[in-house]
Amino acid sequence: MRKSIIMMMLMAGAVSMQAAISEKYAEGYDFESLPLNTTTSESNISLFADNQLLFLNDGKVYLSQFTEQQDSLLAPQESNELTKLGIQGNVAYDAAKGKIYFSLVESETCEWLYESTYKDGKWTTPKRLEIEGMGKVRGNNAFMANAGWSYISTVKNIMQNPAIAKNGTRLYFTSATIENGQGGKDLWYIDQKSDKLWAAPVNAGETVNSTADEDFAFVEKDELLYFSSNKEGITHLYLAEVAGDAWHTAQKLEAPYNSAVNDYSMVVTNGTPYVVTDRNVGNGSDIYAYVKRPCQISVSDIEVVQEFTGGGYAITGKVTFKDAPSTGNLYVKDDTGVAKTFELPVQSPFSFEIDNLDCDKDTVTRAVMAWFSDTNCESKATYLAPAEIKREFYWVYFLFEFDKSELLPQSKADMDRLVKEMQKFPEAKFEVSGYADERGSNEYNDKLSKRRAEAVKKALIEKGISADKLKIVAKGENALQIKDAKDEDQHAQNRRVEVRIINPENK
Image 1 (cartoon, rainbow, N blue to C red):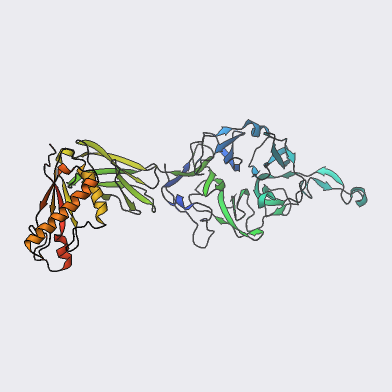
Image 2: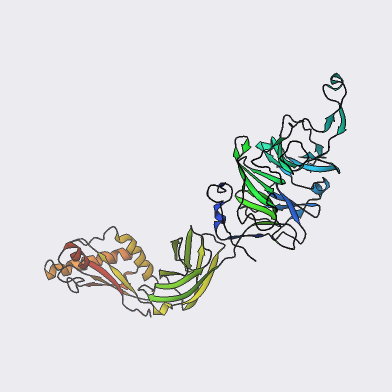
């Protein structure tokens, strides 16, 4: 069953995860089992070369490619070459050196850290790490005999699950056999002294380790240390922030990273977390991550609400959705190309209106689409557009200055739109009517209105409208738009030219 995200950051005063986990997972995602999981256990996740996740299943090594967004994984492939190296736990990958570190079982009492380098298209034979002060115990022979040491027996030691830090110069690992730990399994680290030697192990300290078992370290950008501990009886995930060369007191992660069952290990890549957990009951341990919820958006109630002169029309409708993003945009678009953008957040259902859409075909079924900025979430619904034969033509007037007949500069855009509409009626003729305000004599205003109509006719001819389609009418101060105009703005409404279609049925 899907489980919604409970929280994206720890409680106030605890370790903040905002710098690590992408905020995009705060909504629209569920933390759940990935499709790559099987009925057997997936375990020991590690970041690997070429943008891949490495994990183990049934003693074999698998690699799964991250997608370009790093927020999901492609189908895994078994790596026979890595399996043959004997890898049985976590792997620490050093991209700069093309090198991996892992542990190999040498005997019932010894599991040691090894390295392998990618060379000539394959991984080299594993090489045992030389760690200062480890590998042998001192005997009782004379100091001069062995430069202060007499090596008489192999140390019994278990070191597992390495994790890389400090640009490859530090390795964290798990051990319960090194002396002077906190008890049980602890997290330790070794620093590289040279190409052939690592310094003696250092305990990660009581801010991280306890008398219980700590394991599965993962260090992110040398700032955050993720690991597991069973100090509460079951295994939980913990996080500590860097404090110089040590760590602040670790805090248990909240849901969804921890659950009521064992949660073992966690890695984070480009803000995306992956966790190994037992919460998929009956399926062994599985890898969990954020999975985007399926698109839940629909368009309905589309209706043509009015027809405009010129053949345009408006539609209204509703967009219904769940789990919408809190930021970005909601887009609504008719398939004629007219679109509107609405800034999120908006409530569901969201009502929209799109107006002035062209209708240049017979009555036809069309579609309106709605989607969020994330184009994976889209819905489409159809509606019946009005037929072209129902269109009427009317063009809003051009205005003129007092006692002038020259077209205003701002009339250019209106003229272009007018020509476009007129061309939709190839057989029609048009009346170009000129008007004047009521100031001046009737005779003068008749002549002035005619000059204004002729100015519009001339502009239309220049844009390709045939002269024989245009009929000039001078109406002077008859049919005033505003009678008894009181101010200049009102007079301006009467100084105009209107263009009408003579045969609106276009026959």
